[in-house]
Length: 56
Length: 202
Image 1 (tube, one colour):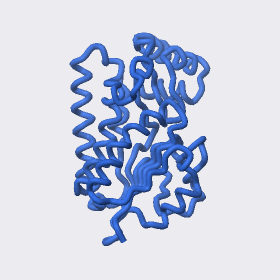
Image 2 (spheres, rainbow over the protein chains, first blue to last red; image 1 turned 60 degrees about the horizontal axis):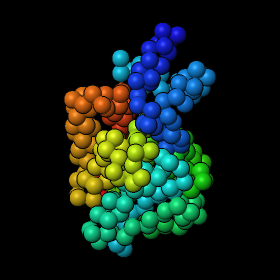
Image 3 (tube, rainbow over the protein chains, first blue to last red; image 1 turned 180 degrees about the vertical axis):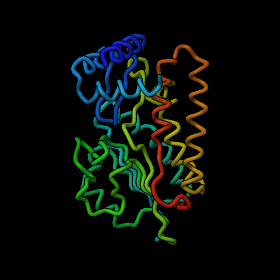
Image 4 (tube, chains in turn purple, green; image 1 turned 90 degrees about the horizontal axis):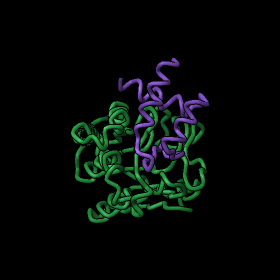
C-alpha cells in the first residue's frame, strides 16, 4: 500500500499547480491538497489512490 | 401537457459553478425544442422548488449539485433526494439524470456509479467555458442531455457519451500537457452507467 501511495503521490506531483480536481461536485482540490488528503488517509485521498491505481 | 425538464444548478461552489455554465447550453437547446424548462438555479435549487417542479411530470431531471451515492444536493448543500425521498427519480446507485417517457412509462436512471471527477484550471479561466481542460470532462456528460433532446433513446445517448469520452481520451494521449488527466477520464467513462429502460426517450 505504501508503495502504491508513493507512486500516486509522484503522479500527483506532476500535475500542474494551477489544475484543480473536483470530486462529486463537493469539493475542488489543488495537487498539493490532494497529496495532503492522501497522507491523511481520508476518503478523498483513498478515492484518488483508487482512481490512479485502476489506471495502472 | 407540454413536455418539461428540470435542471438543478446551485452554483454554490467552484465545482458547481462549472456545471452551472455547462447546463446553460442544455437549457437553451430544450427551449429551442419547445420544451418547458424548470431552471432551478442558485437559491431555487432547493427542496421546495424541486418538489413543486416535479408535479409537472418532467421527462428529464438533471442534477448539477454535489452529493454522493446516497443523496443529491442543491443550493448550500440542501438535500434534494436521499434514500427516504418519495420521488420517482430516486435511485441509490446512480445520480445526475432521470429520464421518463410519459407516454410509455419507460424510466431510466443515468449517471456515474462511483465518484464523478473532473479536472479544471480555474485560475487561468475567469469564464469556465473557456477552460479547455474542463471541456474534456464536462462535454461528454452534456452530450447525454443533448442527444436525448435531439430524440435519441437513453441507450443511444449513452453510446454517444462513451464515444465522446473515447475521443477525449485519445486527444489526451496525444497531448503530453494533459496526460495527468487520463486516469480520471478513463474512470469517468468506465463508471458512466444506465439503469432501467435503455429504450426510454423524452
